[in-house]
Image (cartoon, helix red, strand yellow):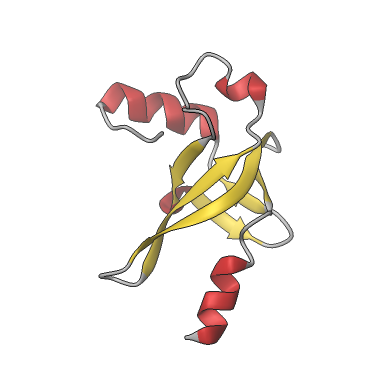
Length: 96
């Protein structure tokens, strides 16, 4: 379990980009489901103002669902944030 914990904490501080190369933000924290022992979200800060300028994101940032993550390496690559964010709002889910 210690190696898994190290992997999870190594996400903090990584930059997050959409799959089309747009900077989204930086991972500030990881949201865990302790019952199932899985990561279910990433808390992002230092958000790209072009993406979130007109959105009510709170003071610190947004939480994106971990299912949006496509790859983790030197950076975190996620599905296109703008399309996902807008479709989530239309479905009535709250992702922020």
